[in-house]
Each structure stands twice: as C-alpha cells, then as structure tokens.
Length: 545
Image (cartoon, rainbow, N blue to C red; front, top):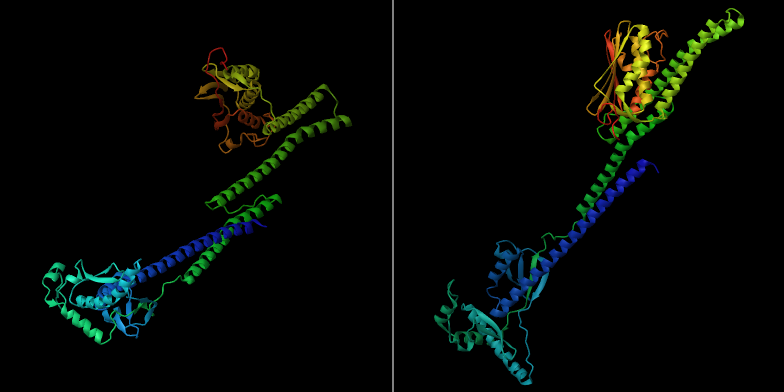
C-alpha cells in the first residue's frame, strides 16, 4: 500500500471517526432533551389536572374555573380546554384570549371531581359512613351555594371517612348566615363571616330546588385537552443531523485528499529528482520556496545536490590536477630513459642526478596525496600532549634559517612567552613548515618572514607573515584548495605540489582549530592558525594536567 493511500486512509478514518462520535453525542443529548421535554409535558398535564380537580372538590362546582384556566394558561403557556360529557365546551383559553377555538391538541385526560371515600376500620363506623354519604350530597349543594356567596370552602374528611365541606376553619354547623353574591376584592375572611347578610335558609332552598329537579349534586366529569392540533410538535428532526453528518464527512474526506496531495506531491517531486540524481543528473533541483517542513526538506535536498555536484567537480579537478602534476616529470623521465636507451644521451652522473630529482618530486606528490586522503578520511593518527607553541616556532625558525639565508630573507620569531596547546607536536611542526616554505617562496630577497605565537582569550594563535607578492583578492578563497598554486601557469619553478595548504587545513580542523589567510597584493600575506588553549602560559614548564 502506497504512502499516499495510507495517509489518506488515516486522515479519513480520524475525520469520519470524530464525525461519528460527534453525531452520536449530539443524537444522545437531543434524545435526552426530547425525553425531558416529554416528561415536563406530562408533569404539566398532571399539574393542570390536579389543580382543576382540587378546585372542583373544594368548591363543589365548575363555576369560576375561567380564572383558574387563565392563571394556568399564563403559567404554562398552553392552550387549555374543558369539555363536558355531552361535548359542550365548559371553558377554553382560546375564547378567553379572544380568538377562534382551534382543534383540540393531542393531550386529552379526564378530570374526575368525585372524591375518594376513605373507609374506617370498624363495622359500626362503616354503617355510619353509609348514612353520611347522603349527608355529603346535601353538603355538596350547600358548599356550592356558599362558594357563589363569596366564601372559600374548605375540604376535610370526617371521622366516618366521608369528605365534608367547611369554611376556612369554621364549622359549617355553626354558620347561620351568608351573604349572597361575591365580596369585594380584598375583603378579609373574618369580615366575610361577620357581615354576612343572607340566611343559610337560602342555601337550603337552593338545595331543595336541585333535589326536586333531580339534578346531579356533584360537578360533572369533564374532558381536559391541552394544546392545539395545528401547533408544531417538538420532536428530534433527523434531517439537519444527517445533513451536518454528510457535510462534515465530505469535509473530512476532502481535507484528507488535500493534505495527502499537499504533502505527497513535493515528496513525489523529491523522489523523481533523487532518481535523476542517481542516474547522473547533477543539475536537477526542486522548488524550495515553501516555509514549512516540506520546503525545508526541499532546500536540504538542493544543498545535497549542490554538494554532490561540487564534490564531483572537485574530484574531476583533482584527477586533472594530479595528471597534470605527474605528466611533466614522467614525460621527462621517459624522454631521458629513451634517449639513454637510444644512445642519444650519455648516462653521466649529472643525467642520473636529474632523473633522481624527478623521481623524488613524483614521490613527494604521491606522499602528499596519500597523506591528504588519510587526513580527509580521518585516518591520521595524532599523539596529543601539552605543546609549547612558542618553542615550536623557534624550532621552525632554526630548521628553515638556512633556506631563508639562501634566498636573502630575514626569518624572525615573536612571542609573549610559552603558549601551551594540547596538540600533536610533529603535525603542528608540519603545519608551520608548510606555511614557512610557502612564505619563503613568495618573498623576494631582502624581505622578511615573521613567526608569532600568543594567546588570545581561550585560543592559542600562530601567525606566519611575509612581505612577499601577496595574493589577489579573487584567489584568496582558493588558497586551501587541493593542487592550487598562485602561479596561473602552474610552473614548477616555484616548487611545491599544491597540496600543502590543503593538508594544513585538514590537520588544523582535526585539532579543533581554524585556519585563515589575509593578504594585500604586493604587500604580503598572513596565515593564522587558531587552536584551543590548554593551561596557563607559564615560563619554562608545561602546565600541570
């Protein structure tokens, strides 16, 4: 399976999984909310029915229920309707709100105002209860009469288990007067009892009229409907949920495609460029203008390509330079040997001395190449120990004084005292010898070469300064390249193999140091070697390790 498909599947699975979990959580919460709403609707229905039934039981009549419906309508916000057994509307909040009655809602329950008989345990009491049932019928009629007169009936259960009617703590049997018609709003209950103007005989006459007309003493059972048929029913709408699910899933899949394409297209470009590089195309580059990790990878690839191309160019140049360096001495050797073989030249000692010099030159080139190869491969062995670089500079002056005197160049040493560095003394002498040899070749008679050793901060600094011809600014960055000579003609009259400074740079780097050159054309050149300083500068002794 390709990486593109794996990335796509991973992102798609994560996106779809997150979408599915979100939808499941939303569905579960919505279902709970719908269930809670349904439960709240049942509680509202039970509350409305309970208050209406309590009012009917208390008052003994459905009269005055309009005010209760208005209050419940304001409290619940529901349309409430009461219908008698014959289908006639007893009360409807739509009529109270001044609007046409709407079709009844889906909730329809029975409001039964008949009380529940609580039977006593004893037999005699139960017989008394049977007798009291008739009295209850009469009291119900009187309670309705008292309610119409403005009194507040009070429901209670007698000792015989039959519900009885009273007036807010007043025994109905002691009440002898009542006032017909409603009391003004705000009238206290005590005032109602004290200022009663109507004899209870009026209520008895009302009961008599009901009895002789054979009417029902208890208010009828009514049908309670809540809501309207044309009101929208709140339910869980799956359409938006499914639509959102599809949209989110599409976005997840589209995002997976976009991410996989955005990530894998540069990778594909890099793969193609790498294959071209492996096939020998060193000039191929990839777009590296991105600011993300892919752009950083592209820039690293281009740097690698440049390094490979530069390495190949260095390799080709090295081969060409080595061939050029060896061609002339080998041609000389071949010419002399063929001339001796043909008898053209006599094999005199001078001829053999010239041939010996050519062999030594070739041997030196080969040795320098081998040493440089070992140094660049990290195969050179170093024996490091505290070395006094100031003393080492004095040794180098002693070794090169005959050569300096031969060309008329003054060779001096400057030092502030012992300067110790943890280094391989033989390799450092080799470095200084290469630098001094180059300086002597570049300095005309009457000039000078100065060797300096001093400490600068935590670095030990060696300097070789000459007053020679100097190096052109455009050539200065090339002085440490292999087989490079300042002489454009690459003549051998100046001597040297062109590998000494490359060896110097590698040995200095192996010691953890740096080497640099600065020059003014026609005024001289300074080569500076910086090595880590180890120990204090002490006179005449190495630092204690």
